[in-house]
Length: 281
Image (cartoon, rainbow, N blue to C red; front, side, top):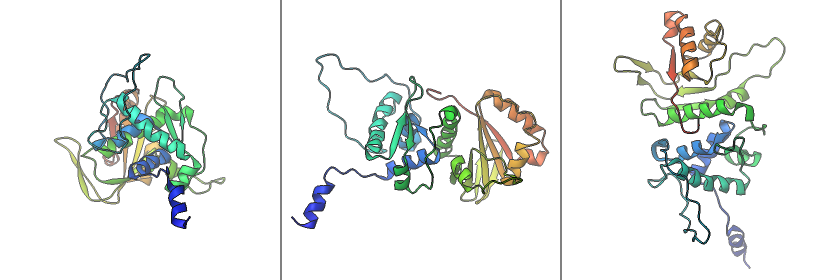
């Protein structure tokens, strides 16, 4: 047996990753975790959100199982319905699990699975992180951050940008010691790549310069926002050129009121957006 013959035998059945796998593993890793339905949207053409559909039909006793559909990445035939998408995406996720690159968790029985990239997977995609416990107590917040990330990616109005996740921001922070003051850590940071005009409405357009850093904050519940205009907002404005808040209805009103208490020039640097509902939210 020649060396080439031996290599061919060892390669039989080996499955590698494609660009879609690397993109989705990276999205999951840098976000700490991601839900399967969100990864399915990342696979969709133009990152289009899913539509409602019927769950897959369960076969009755004696019914013949239909042949499996070919696997593949983002393509015109990628399912649009949410249940069909979940099934298609789980085939991809199971592939990662078989390779040892990911694990799945189901903290809520009535919601889709969550995916976590393993140490082996992080090494495969070149992510410089250590393992962390599954963030079960912070899933609602992480879910909304991922939703905002998908919105920013698919929107045709948002200028071209790069994204820095909270996990990356934490990694970049200096070693903490007594007396060291570290500014408020944003949920994510957008870095605008090229000069662009961002149209807020028919009446208002703002100019964004290449290199500008925009802190992104996501608020899901109305907590104690007292002093927001005295503490967190000024701190973020010292670190970044702009601050964008994405809020559910309750915190939207509270953040807007805090913003209104700032000087007019500071108010212009802060935008507050209202989050929209999503499947299984």
